[in-house]
Each structure stands twice: as structure tokens, then as C-alpha cells.
Image (cartoon, rainbow, N blue to C red; front, side):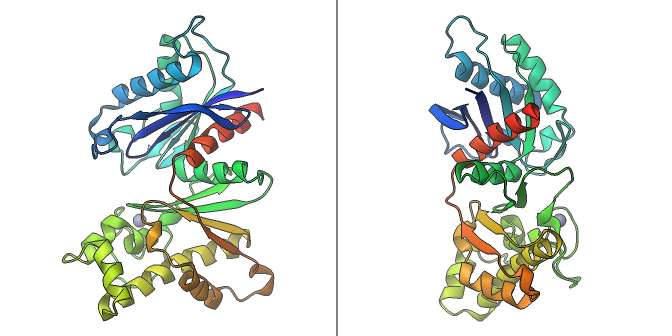
Length: 303
Ligand SMILES: [Zn+2]
């Protein structure tokens, strides 16, 4: 049997214990009151590492002696660019940018009497791993778009690289400058929550999509652009890595209309061997990323 701990850091921290790649027992949440917004962004990086180490200790042994339970792997999923255990970029949690998270967490865990290998993954990659694991598709290419404040792109199996799919260029229009990174024409500059608020200073994104349904011309045109942008980015990945399954999740996935996305994709992907793609919406949950964080850690460390 393998025992792993999965941890997901987004607007909050969630941790859980996996036995043979299945979640067992209760998940631990920080903050324990999920209604507290943005608390995590205000916590210093060292304190965050200590919180995670404490959660892992609780899950590892439940506080019982001996404290050092045999753990095969610890997987942590964070938003941003992650390479070799270092968080190179993390726009939504700026305090962890540049952090040697693998090293720091390993050190903090030693203080808690836990010696287990730590693996850090991008959060969207973790969701892709979780989907592949829970659907028995670990041998297949799985791609995930996370649609929220930012736009994330995740893939399983893990391949070395940056994979900032949310910043793929989907338009040459110089007026498309709403991306948080400052780049012109980016997918996130059209689809991201923050970018939509900048574009529609008088309307919240929810109102834009509601007005579009009622026939408002400006909003309808934008909703179409939003879907065309996602279709363009998805078509680019189909042209690079081939067809296959794409999953969509994230707090704004409710805006997505699969038939509209598909109709745009069909205008963009015309080579017949590439047309066998499938599209599926995933419900928003923490469990998928958590399982994926643990499974990618086991795979990365077990070879
Ligand atoms: Zn960008």
C-alpha cells in the first residue's frame, strides 16, 4: 500500500491523506472558515509553510505516537510556474514567488518529525493528474483548462516546461491589453475574471453573461469573443499535441457553453485526424487536485 499526503494551495489550503491513490478520512482546511476572503494572500511565506507542515503532521499520524508515520510522498499543488520545486511565478500569491517550496517544506517537516519526499506541482497540472487517476486514464494525455481569476492550463502526464496556456496569444488586436501579466492579446486578458472587470467597468462578469442571454448586443458579442478565444487556444494545443480530451473547471466554468465552444473549434480544426477531440466540464471541487497532487508526487518520486 502507498500512503501519500496531497495539499492544494489556491485561495485557501486543503490537505488530505491518500491510501493507494484514494482519499481517506477528512480533509483539513485553512482558513477553517471558507468565507474569509483573501486571507492567504496576507500570510507571510514562512508562516504558510508552517501551516502546511502542521496539516501534514496531523494527517500523517493523527498526533499519535510514533509521530513519524511512513509516508511515501507528499504532493503540493500551487498556482503559477513551478520548476524543480521552486515557485518561479505566482501572480495570485505573490509572497511565494521565488520560493524554494520543496526545500523549505522538507525542512519544516523535519521539525515535525516527518521525513518524506516532497513534490511541488502546478495546480492545473494537479487537476489533470487527478482526473486521469480517478478515471483510470493515467496512460493517456489529459488536458485541463481552469477558468477563474486567471486562466490555467494543466496536462497529464507531466512534461518539463512552462505551459502557461492562459497567456497564449489568441488575437492580434492591439486593444486587447487586459491580461494581468501585461501581455497584449492573451487568452487570460479576454477570459480572466479580473480582465473582464477591467473591460466592463460598469458590469460584473456575472451581469455580462446574464445580459448576453437577454440579447444585449455588446454583452453577446463579448460572450462570443470569450468562447472564440478559448476555442483558439484549445485549437492551438490540438495542432501541437493532437486531439484527445479537454476538461474545463474553475470558479467561472459556469459561463462556459460547450456547444458554442465546439462550434468555434470546428471552424478552427479542419484536419480530419485532429477532429476526434472531446470536451467535458468538471464540477468544481478540491478533491480532484488533491488526489492529483498526491498521485503526481508518487509518480515523480517513485519513477
Ligand atoms: Zn498574459
